[in-house]
Image 1 (spheres, rainbow, N blue to C red):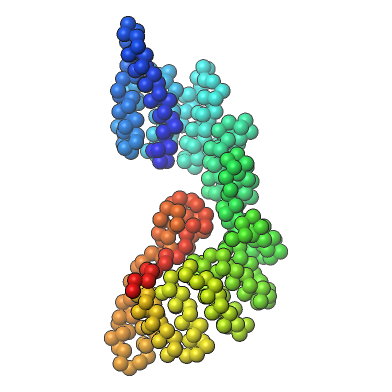
Image 2: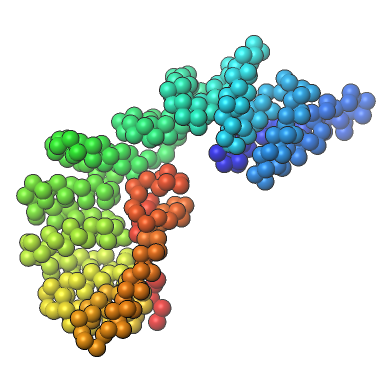
Amino acid sequence: MNTLNLLWLLLPIAAACGWWAALRSQHKAAPKTPDWLNPACFRGIHHVLNEEPDKAIAIFSQMLEAHSDLIDIHLVLGSLFRQRGETERAVRVHQNLLARPDLTAKRRSQVLLELGRDYLQAGLLDRAETLFQDLCAKKQYLPEALQHLRILYLQEKAWLSCLQTSEALEKATKKDLSPEKSHFFCELATQAQRLGQIAQTRLYLKRALRIHPGCVRANHLLGQIAWQTGKHRVALSHWQQTVRDDPSYLPEVWPDLFNACQTLDKLTELNTLFAEIGDAVPGSDIALYQAEVLQQCEDQTAAANFLLNAIRQFPAIPAITAYLQKHIDHPQTIDLKILSAALQQIQQQQTQYQCRQCGFQSRALHWQCPRCSIWGTIRRRLSVQKTI
């Protein structure tokens, strides 16, 4: 849990400190300010914001020893325990708060939300689900409860529940979650496809496109299903639309797209597609695919010369590697074989994919970013732009 998420718990403490400081300045004869409102409170907040949970816990624990009735301090302490991975201690703190007879209904809901977070982090999903659902039923802390329910259902891969929760969250927050919902439909489609339920698979994918027309994943999968069932022209149409919707997805759909154009004798349509996507794909990247088409339509020499011109404008390892590979069989290029192998090795060591949201890098495509949990944000990393 990010320490900044504790701010909403720390604000009441800071406000109380400020209020008591103002009170003391106005009423000199007022009783001495309680010990728990001394600068230690602010030192504790300082340690939280500087990601020093151990020091913060020490300060807030001392404050509770003197004043055990401070609910906000209990909440902060429980969250700090959870942040540090001590979920059992966090659970105890929040359960002790729930046992207090003087707890108001709003405070009880706040503690239940924190306890649900404890259970979620501890992997006690059934208990967490019950608490979050109860909060939703009472419309208490609704956006937060729905968000944590969705996280829970994602862990369980309960895609229908993810969809239902997302729809409720959209109503509660007025935020458009269509891109994420389209991925949930794609996950359902993938499950149905594994079970051989082709009609159901198509239905899920079409629903994904209905709520999010730019879902490249759905179009790609629809194309694959169409191809497997002999509807080759339909498949090609889906894959062309995939690239139009998101040109950066071209590397993923290229094997299917190129094979379809070869089979249907429509390689020239690829040049039209390249012209449509224009500058959306860097020249060094798109040159690799243009050269592959040129090699099929003309010969390897024409493709190699095309790559050489592209390398002059867009120097990049993938284009250089492709160019060298087209000269491997020439007797005078024995050194080029070594160079080509070295360049390929460099490529393999580099991360190929990156999340547009948080910058997470990986060597494989993930539909949901492992770091920020956003769907559909990971794409193949692009090469450098034109430098000369």
